[in-house]
Image (tube, rainbow, N blue to C red; front, top):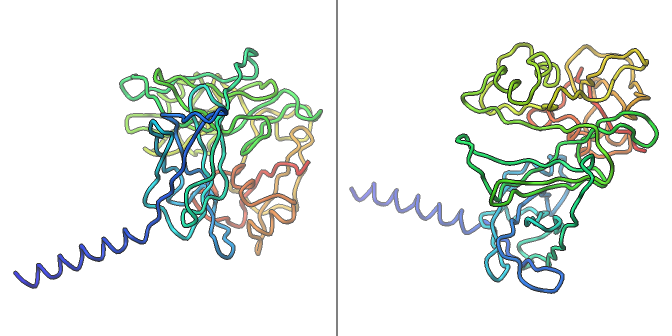
Length: 328
């Protein structure tokens, strides 16, 4: 009995010690006049190591995605964070533009002041995507953070139709649903379609997902490199509502639509520039790393991962085909 009690005490003490090693991040959110903003969502977006260098995906750390809501005084606290990391925070509130607070170190005290400015209404329907977030019972869900995955444009810098992914100038990086579950995302230029990243639920089938978004199961397989119609719970699918396909990948006008952003195939010689989309298709060769490829194309590891989402779930492999946005 006593021995068991001692072991339990040691376990409790160890748990308490581990908890005390974690960090808490605090701060305050206000509007342009200095008035506290209540009920704003504060989200850990990116993270990075304080010392040295890491090639780990900045948005893939365990702490990324942690969030809290500001109180009446505009104050917030996010607990249980890794003390060895710095954090980028995104602040969202319905009716305001998103604010980014960069490289916050919890060990140095509260985060720098974040100021929310009113978001201007967008009347041009070609520049905005509006939606509604619901649960499995179709009930509205508020305070949900929505992150766009990419945009499709009729013309990008005079290069013709293009689909782009990751962080894009002029595209709102986040939105938050209101009490009715409604949200809105705007871009500075007209878009030809929208891309939805859909998380497969327990009761979903390829047919039910295709029916919900007015696409075909063949398109689902093509966009997500599926060999069959089988979809597993938790799988993330890329969907183009209404059958919208990415920009053409082939190098001639006779090309069929449907750029494959990343697929497995045998090694081929060198990159191929896509004149229609302004992107580069790179076939990974032995000895190459994400860092070396990013350096060769004068881009970043994060940008390559954003355009090739399978890299978030597994390491780079020889034979992979990467789509890399033009440096221009």
